[in-house]
Each structure stands twice: as C-alpha cells, then as structure tokens.
Amino acid sequence: DTAVSQTPKYLVTQMGNDKSIKCEQNLGHDTMYWYKQDSKKFLKIMFSYNNKELIINETVPNRFSPKSPDKAHLNLHINSLELGDSAVYFCASSRRGSSRGQGLYSGRPYEQYFGPGTRLTVT
Amino acid sequence: SQQGEEDPQALSIQEGENATMNCSYKTSINNLQWYRQNSGRGLVHLILIRSNEREKHSGRLRVTLDTSKKSSSLLITASRAADTASYFCATDPSGTYKYIFGTGTRLKVLA
Image (cartoon, rainbow over all chains, first blue to last red; front, side):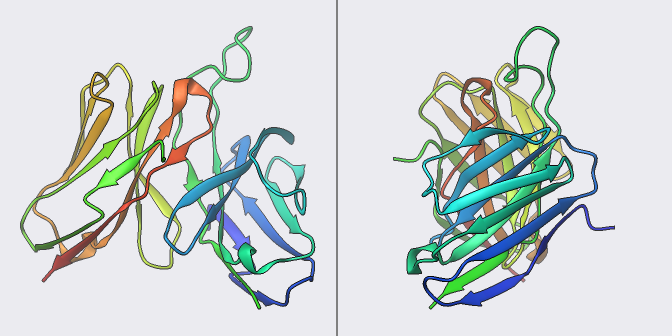
C-alpha cells in the first residue's frame, strides 16, 4: 500500500565508503525527486527526474549520482562518503502537468508525495 | 537567504487554540504549498494555492496568499495534540518545478 518507499531506513557507514539508497513509487507518477534534510531540518532539492530524464541537478558534489531505471524508481548512489553527507535523504514523486508545445515547465502544479526518509550517518 | 522563510520558528499553544504560521518568499511564484512533517517521518502535503488565488480552505486549514507582499499564512483552527509537527511552505519560482522549502515552523500543541 506504501505510496513512496525507501530502503534502507537507516544507514550507518564509515567515511570513504560507497552506498546506495533506493526509492520506489507505486502512484504512477512521472516525476521523482531526491531531497536532503540537514540537522536543522532545512530541506534542499538535489535532483529530479521526469520520465527517466534528469531535469533538475542542483549544486551537488559529483560523488552523488542518481539513477532512474524506470519511471517508478529513482536510486541515489553516493561515492566516497564524507562526514558532511550525514543527513536524512527523502525521495518524493509527483505528477507533472504539461501542455503540448509548451515545453517541460508548463502545466498545472501538483503536490509531492514523500517517502519516509533514509537517515544516513557517516562516522 | 532562503526563498521561503517561516515564522515563527517555534510555536507552542494549548489544544483548542488556533495556530498561525507565516511564510515569506523572495521571487515571483507559480504556486505555494504547505507541508507537515511529523517527527521522524516524511513530509505530507496539506494544501496548494496558486498565484492567482488569495485564499483556500481544507478542513481546519486555511491558507492565504498575498503575492504583493510575497507572503502566505497557514491557519490551523481548533488545534489538536495530533497537529504537533513541523510545517513547511514550498514555493515554485515561476513554475520551474524546482520547489524551494522554507525553514519550517515547529508547532507544539499541548493537551
């Protein structure tokens, strides 16, 4: 029944390791996002995919690489983990309205559905 | 500074009272959304208001939007202990779908 699911829920690892977080949505949405929430609860967008195409790529170290094998999945791989990567990572999905001939950033807005988050602790 | 900034940062009220949170933003927007986050959980969408709307209601929630002042408010009436959570506004500058979240208001409703 879970709309947006993430695994794992908790991830504790050492500096320098490589880890992946998986996200799946069963809502039939065509757009998925990764957000990072720091210890002060500040939530910042990292990436967004629309129909498996990367459309938002914020200023994020290239150690972070998203991969979308299909519209329902968006995984996040992180290389050479650093202490500052410790945070809660949220996956989200939404519909994205579009009108023919008006480009990607058109159409009506839709709400986002968030996963439960993955708490990453780098030691 | 942040696109969206909520105030107050924290709010503590008694059950039954109303809670009002404000969000200010800097650039023009296509729409503004409010989300709730319970401790240790993901965000849950509450309400979306478009830039051409001034007020929206959903149950005990009332959202206003003043684009001339670049601000929005979320009013929760007759609050309950279960409303205890952090509340975030999210703006979509000019319909780019790159949502920017505010710093959040931590609401505590005392039973």
